[in-house]
Length: 108
Image (cartoon, rainbow, N blue to C red; front, side, top):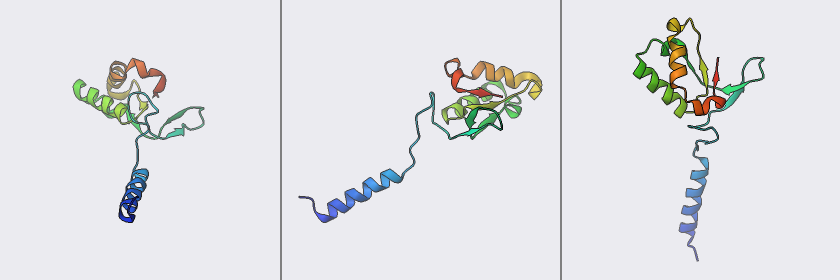
C-alpha cells in the first residue's frame, strides 16, 4: 500500500510533467511552431519566419548555419527576394533549404 507521502509526491511529479511544455514533432526536420493564415491567401505559415534580407549579407557558412538552425527550431516560413543582397539570399535558400522538406516550407 502506498503511503500518503509517496502518493502525494508521485501526484506532484505527474502534475508537473503535464504542465511542462513539450515540443510537438508534427513537422519533419524539427520542432513544430504554431501556424497562422498568411494575409488573405489560403496559406498557413509558421508564426516565425526567417527573412532573407540579412541572410544574404552573411558569409555562406554562417548563412547555412542560420538557415539550418531555423529549420531545427520549427521555422517553415522564409522570406526572400532577388533584391536582397543582389539575389544572394535566394541562392542561399535554394542551396541550404533541404529538398526533402520542400513540401513543408513556404518561401515568399
